[in-house]
Image 1: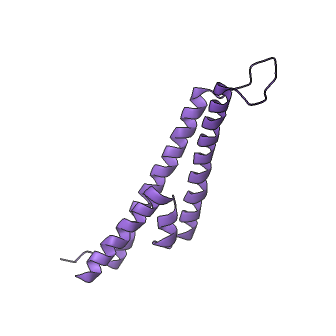
Image 2: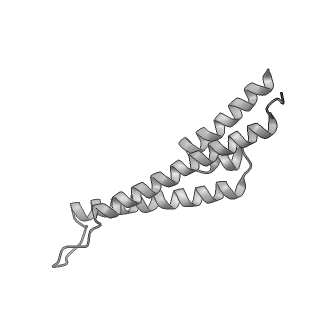
Image 3: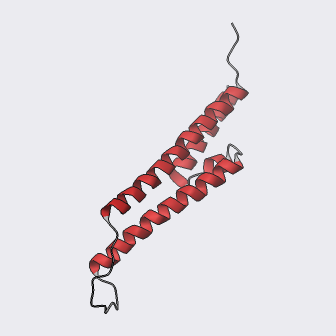
Length: 117
């Protein structure tokens, strides 16, 4: 049946887009859930940027700031902060994938209702 294979590829594509390419992209492009897609795009991107910014800050402080001439050691982020930001980014990403999967289940159930006995 061409309808079932097209639906399967469409639902699998939404999960792959949201999980592997960009968070929220599957909701935006395939599921047409614009508010959820925008929310996950903003939240996941912000949390990932915070994590990577903190990691770069730690590397710059560890290897020495270029042109730093202060007498005291520059402040550095703690490992708890970096771990917390990583866990926050991982949680946002996993919630994005779960939301995409649940949206696909809901969409498939509406398009193909179960047979009534």
